Image 1 (cartoon, chains in turn orange, purple):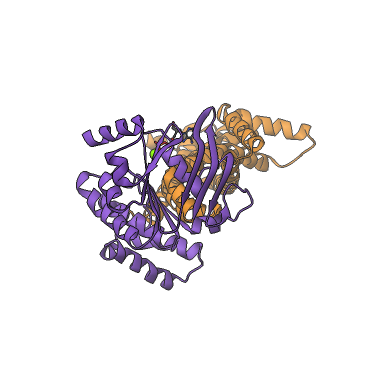
Image 2: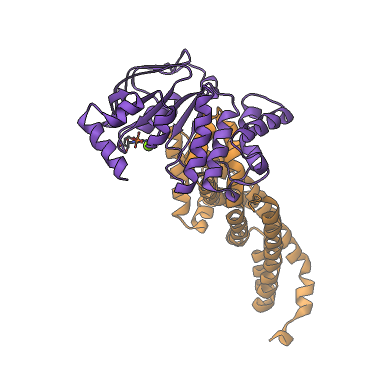
Length: 221
Length: 242
Ligand SMILES: Nc1ncnc2c1ncn2[C@@H]1O[C@H](COP(=O)(O)OP(=O)(O)O)[C@@H](O)[C@H]1O
Ligand SMILES: [Mg+2]
C-alpha cells in the first residue's frame, strides 16, 4: 500500500504536522507538570487528618475516574463560558488534561507513600524525627522508586489522551491529520503520519523512563 | 524514671490498659510478660507516646506524657524503642540508619554522628557491617543494628517489644547477649519478652499482664518458680512447654 502513498502531499502539509506535533508536545508537558502539582496536593489532602479535606479529595478523584475524559473536556469547554470564563480552547484542553491526570497521579503517589511499611514510620517517630523529616528521609526516597514507572505510564497515557482535544478544535497532532483529511481526502496518509509522530513521542518517553529508572530507583543491591 | 498512675486506655470498647500503676526507677530492668493481646505492646507504646493514654497520669523522666503540650521530640529523644520486626530503613545502609536521628534530631555534624554510630555498632558487634544494607544482614544482625540505632540517641530508657520473637532460634542468643550487656551497664530497660533465661539473668522485676491489667509483680525467680496467681501459673506452664 505504501507505493500508493502520496508523499508529496504529506511533505506539503509538513508545516501543519509540525504545528500539531509542537502543540501536542507543549500541551502534554504543561498539563503533565500541572497535573503533578494537582496530584501531589490531592494526595496530600487524601492522606490528611482533616475529614473535610479528605472528602473533597476523594470526591474529586472518584468523579474524574468514573467519567470519560471526553465528557470532562466538553464539561469545561461548554461549562466555563457559562460561568463567564472565556479562555482559548488550548487552555481549556490543558485544564481538562490537568484535572484528569491529576486524579490518577494522586492515586499513584498515594500508592507510593503507603507502600512504606508503617513500622518504619513508627521507628522514625520513636527516634524523634518530625513529620517532614520522616517524609523527606524515610518515605519519599522509597516512594519515588515505586512511583516513577507508573508516572511515566501516566505521561504516555496523557500524550495519547491529548488527541481528544481535537474534538474542541485544538490544532494538535490528531487535529492536523483531520485537517489534511478534510482538505485533500487522504485519511491513510494523514493518520499514518500522525501515528508515526505519536510513536516518536512514545519512544522518547520510553527512553526517559529507562534512564530515570536507572537514576532514581534506590540502590538496593 | 517511668511512673504510671492509674493509667487507662481503650481501643473503642476494648479496655486495653486497665488502671495501670507501675514505677520503674533509673537503672532498673523490668520484664513484661503475659498472653498475646494482654496489652503489653500498648503499655510500652504509651511510654514514648506512639499511643496516647486516655485517663490517669504518666511521667517519664519528670515529663508529663499525659499532657498534650509536652515536647514530644525531647521525650522521644530520651527513649530508644526496639521493635519485634526491627524496622530498619531499607534504602539506607547500616551507618545511615544509625546516624539519621542523631544528625536530624540532635543536630550533630555528619562526621561526629558517624563516629558515635561506629561506637554503638562496636557495642553490638557489627562495626564491620557499617556499609552493608539491611537486607544483606541476618535477622539477628538487623535487630542488633536496630539496638545500635536506639542507642545512638544516647537515650535514658530503652524499650524492647518482643525483640527476639521474629528471629530464628539460632539468632536469639546474639541479640539477648547484647541486651544483657546493656542491662549490666545500668541502662533503664522495659522488655516485653517470654525469654525466661534473660529475665532470670538480668531482670530486677517481672510484671505479668492479662486483659489489660497488671496481675502480678515479682522477682524473676520467685515469679517463675512460685507465681501467686493461677493465671500466671498457667501462662508459665505454657511457655515452659513451648
Ligand atoms: N491500634 C489498635 N486499634 C484497635 N485495637 C488495637 C490496636 N492495637 C492493639 N489493639 C488491641 O488491643 C489489645 C492489646 O494489644 P497489644 O497491646 O498489642 O497486646 P500484646 O502486645 O500484649 O499482644 C489486643 O486485643 C489488640 O487487638
Ligand atoms: Mg505485642
